Every structure is written in structure tokens, then in C-alpha cells.
Image 1 (cartoon, rainbow, N blue to C red):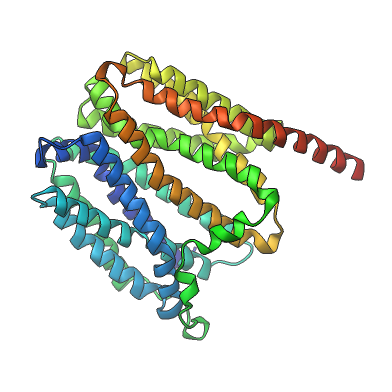
Image 2: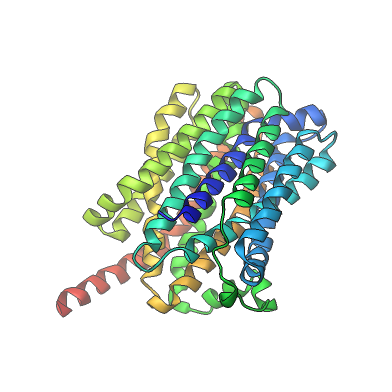
Length: 402
């Protein structure tokens, strides 16, 4: 494995840990800063403003790295993140906390630069493997982060921010003293202003009629999938009285089980059932789990539902694979970029919508928010039926051709 790849993967892992560390303590920190604040509503805005800045700034940092190299852009973003987490850890009021969150989203857009660095040191034979390693270490970081945040957040609500700052400081030192520039001078290009537009790829993917029904299902699946990330922490504290440590541990368990499901179950299930049936199975399981979460009155019920809920995660890669089959090999890069943009937009909208509704539900009816998320899958039914007929016809054509 190239040394540059190892360093970038370590930086990605540390970034993910730093991001996940602060999640379990944000609700209590909001209460500490202002007793009048609507915690659920502001928690949703905190998640969304981060995603918004990533959506807007990812193409900017990516284009800057094409022009000036990966290493300098990574150095600036990592240094900025370290300073920003210190500011957030010492924030005396909500305004400073929001400003810090905006800056965190801007610096967090360096994932586009890390991805480019991995592409630089990869070839056709190992590129998919290297990207898979990147997603794996990000998942590991996101599992570790909430666990650490829950433990240290119990000592002080400010400690997780300072730990996140330290981790970004370590990443900065790695990039400064160990990481080598992966983009040679001769391969750098002039700054393309059109590349800074995050909506460019969305116009392209929306212009292809064959993709539209797949994309509608993709968006609905992604939107429903925002439910656990948006309200897991707040709902668990409100409904079951969980501590920060237990919330952090449960969030880590959810991330770990989801990663295992998508890494080890998606392939065998898809191979046995086919992509379409695997998608339908995943959507059905996830929808049923959401309904059961609405009526789960005990903590043990939540943990029992974690396993089937994560099994439902096979729907996400299945629909993404179906979409990828609709375009040629030469269009895959642009397609995947468009899907990332769509996911970013959903990540902006979902947390705001879910937390806004949750904040207005009576405490004794808080579980109803899960039924709303389950109801989203109903909009998939007519489209899924159409896709099922198309899949049957396509299978028959392929069988005749064989």
C-alpha cells in the first residue's frame, strides 16, 4: 500500500472520529447555552447547516486541489478545523456555536480532496479497492467517535470538542510532515469556474428520462434513511431517559451493524435475489422497523430492533447499483457525483424536517415521528411496481439473448 494512501486513510478516519464525537453531547450543550432553545429543532439545523456547507464547498475545495495540489488544501482545511473545534468547545452562546458549525462544514468538505488524493495514487486495478478502504475507515471512525463522545461528554460537555480539535491537529501534523503531494505539477489544471457550481451535475442527471423513476426511489430511500441520524440521540434521551454514554454506545452500535450489513450481506443477498428483489426486501424490513420503533416503549426493544433495521440497509446499495446500470461506463463518474450531490441535498432537508415535526409533537406521542418516516415508503410503491415490470422485461430479454 502506498504511504500516501495510508496517511490519507488515517486522516479520513480521524476526521470521522472528530465529527462523531460531538453528536451525543450536542442536545445537552444546547440546553446549557440557552434554557429557552428548542433543542430538537436546533439539533436538526446543526446537522443540516453542516451538510449545506459541504454541498456548497466540496466542488470548491476539489477544484482548488486540482489547481494548487491536494496537500496545501488539506493542510489549510485541517488547521481550520482544529481551530474551529476549539472555538466551538469554548462557545459562550448559540451564535458562536452556529458560526463554528458553518466553518466545520466548510473544512469537512475536504473529503473531496481526500478522495482525489486516493484516485491520484490508484490505478484501474486497485481503485475500487482503495475507495472501499476509504469508506471502511470512515465507518470505523464514525463508530468510534460517538462512543468516545458519550464517555468524555459525561465528564464535561466541552471535552469532546477539544478532543476533536486535537484529532484534527494530529491529522494536520501527518499531512505536514508525512503526506507527500499526489498531484504532479504537470497534471494540474487552471481553475475552472463552472466546476465550482454544485448544481451543475444535478442538471445533467435530471435531463435523462430513464433515470427519473430510479432517482425518485433513491431520494425517498435516502430521505427516510435520515430519520435515525436526525432523531436517534434526542428521541432516546426523551423517551427512555438514556445517558450520554448509552446514547453514544447505541449510536456506535447502529453504525457498526449498518457497516457490517452493507459490507457482508448486500453481496450475497443481491446475488441470490437480484438487485430489484434485494431492494424491495430492504425497503420492507426498514419500513416495518420504523413502525415498530414508533411503539417501542422499553430500551431493550430499541436494541432488539437494531439488527433488522440495519439489515434493511441493503436497499441503499441495491438501488444505487440499479441506477449505475442505466448509464454507460464513460458516464459513471458524473453519475456518482450527481448521486453524492443528491444525498447532500437530502441530508440538508431531512434533519430540519424531522426535528421540526418532532419538536411540535406532544411528549407522549413522540414515537409518531417514526410512522411519518415509514409513510414515505408508501410513495415508492407505484414506482417500484413500474421498476419491477421493467426488471422482468429486461431479464427476459437478457435470457433470450443468452
